[in-house]
Amino acid sequence: MAEYYSADLSEKVIRGMTENALKCKYNGGGLTLGYTIDSEQYFQVDPVTAPFMLEAFKLYDEGSTMTEIKDILNERGVRNAKGQLMTFGSVQHLLSNRRYIGEYQYRDIIIPDGIPALVPKDLFDRVQQKLAKNKKAPARHKAEDDYLLTTKLFCGYCGAYLCGESCTSRIGRT
Image (cartoon, rainbow, N blue to C red; front, side, top):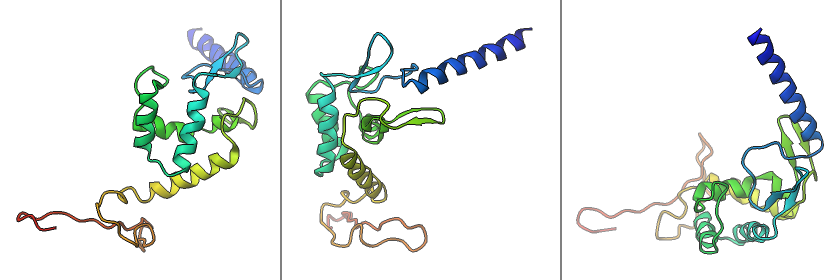
């Protein structure tokens, strides 16, 4: 009986959450920065934190690094979903979260424009392209010198970009 009850309860919970998802209601879990939940469980734009989310996308699109964005958000008092200082990982998650373009997702249900959008679609797409490009060249800022062919040459085996690197020997020669 306990096994039947558990399976039946699971089915009812999933059915209820699916119904909520079809109505684009909040189903629990971590709340996305820039949004609040109203009394009827719908997503609403948070007037306090939403401008910072749009600014983070604009800064990254203009060439700022994730570390610079993290520092700017921390200076302005923005906290992550757990109420802690922003980290590199929270900025990375922020920049790749599709909710900011209004896309609601629960399991296999995806509803475009299901929630209010904070970031224009074209800006979001440009940021995603830059994220994909920078993911393949993680060490491009490692060297102090600029190497002209960084991110232009790539490995014939794995497809990773080749990055210039310099170091100092024991005797101090670069």
